[in-house]
Amino acid sequence: MSAEPADGSSVVRRVAWNTAAQAVGKAAVLAIGAASIVVTTRYLGASGYGQFALALAFVQMLGLLADLGLLTVVVREISRRPEETERLVGNALTLRLALSLGVIALAGLLSLAMPYTQQVRVAILIAGVPLLLGLANTAIVAVFQARLRMGRAAISDVAGRAAGFVALVAVAALDLGFYAVVATAAVGALVTLVVTWRLSRPLVRIRPAASRPVWRSLLRNALPVGAALAVTEVYFRADTLIVSLFEDYEQVGWYALSYRIVELLGVLPAIVMTSVFPLLSRYLRENRELARRTLDATADLFVALGVPLAAGGLVVAPQLVRLIGGDDFEGAADTLQILLFAGALAFVSGLFGMALIAGDRQRSALRLALAALALNVPLNFALVPSLGIDAAASVAVASELLLVVGGGLLVRRELGVAPRLRLLWRAVAAAAAMAGALALVDDWSLAVLVPLGAALYTAGLWALGGIDRRMLEALRA
Image (cartoon, rainbow, N blue to C red; front, side, top):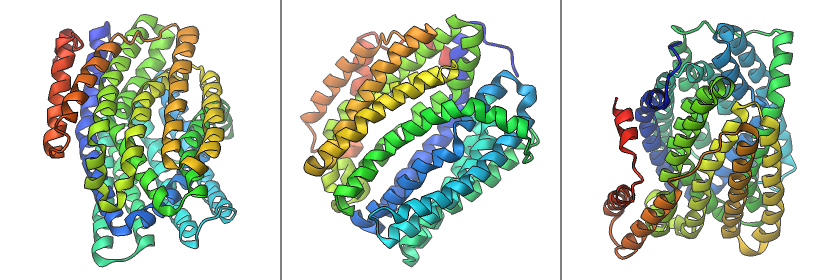
């Protein structure tokens, strides 16, 4: 690997190069994802989309049992010990495949105990196939992430998403039905895996391996991380499952669409964290000052992105859900407005959780995730039956606020590198001014409102001194 960055600007440049390599691909993924939602919602309708989303959420929640935190631990370990890459990745690949088969069987059995239709239960089994293929793919992607070569992962991701979208369009055009829509995810996952494997060959020879000592070592290190990630996944998916127990599939569809939009908007923070994690894993062991600078810059970036999304969403959410889902999804607007605030908080809470894991404080991350879950689930059961999906969205905001505050305190106390969030007040002021201006013309087209809002927010942030010229120069270098 290349030499360690010598200063903060070099850190920014290195992360920026890796981030830029992914950004082009993720922009395509974002566009394909949005187009896929449009096709799926309009083909299935609100009730059908609710059943589709419920099946995926059910499988994805259980899918963490097949990961157990292995991906995060493998990235961390091969970032520190590159010479162990082939052995670690080969064993992680085999272990994850074995676990995924058990999870698919478990999902099918558990679905029988839930008050779901037969259509949802069958969809859960079909959705297990892309889960297995996806877990195999991310085992290989660990190499790209550790070596800051995520541009290759972006290529495979775009290829897979494009293949899945073509399959989805064909299913809708030929009117092949609900199950065929669910199965299109497997088409995309298979293409992604094949392309990822081909692109990894110049970097490392990956062969499935089954070494008991390596498996024991991986599991011993991964279980605390996996427990934290599993709790987090339950926290993210529990609200959809709880909504499905008390509301009809149309309401589930509205909530799922709102959540999916927020997830798509979280693509850029996910790219940045993918680039930052290997660096933090090393810097927290070797150079706390570089770790502090990296965390500080990343937190400011997430604040700059999240705050205007939440503020602007108050104005554009009604038009956005109609554009993506059609008239059947108008009832999702209020829920989306609330969930966008949860999404903005999640940018920062996710960063804090990642920093704790990078610094070997996964048990602290687990305790915090358990606290959020202990708040989230009881509140959802108490409020959703009477107040519906807006209550579930509000509980998500409260849970994320707990994660941000708790995560910030833990990072400061246990790692000593807590970000200062110097950009926060400037971002809030600029976003408030932007939202106020957009509210005066909220009947304008989204094609005008979105770029206008971006321009107003950027200008306000610049006027308040929130855009660091030195950082821009570093990113251009």
